[in-house]
Length: 137
Image (cartoon, rainbow, N blue to C red; front, side):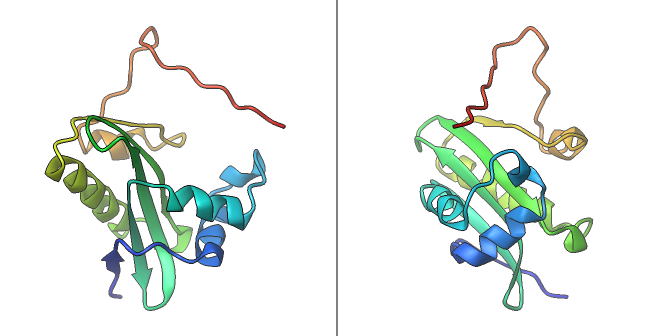
């Protein structure tokens, strides 16, 4: 199995199909159009493909100078455990380093802390700054 990695954005349908494998959309019910617009506004992204199938994706939202947020790191469940997420993450981190972006943040799915700790990320203390709000229309 050969996986290729590129900076080419996936199609709206390909990304929507991959995103749906995560279960994240249950809370928001984003359309394929909204999700594609979101990834199109990214500072940098990586798509992982096996032949024509999108099997992984990750992106960075950033000002390109010092603030960066890694999001939507997804590997299709049938392809997990094969190093695809690790490679995507490494390519995202390399892009930050190449551009001298030093403040890298992310939110991770439940149970995935250990994956990100391998890249040097640390869980913020419970009393550290960091808040969120999920706004539903």
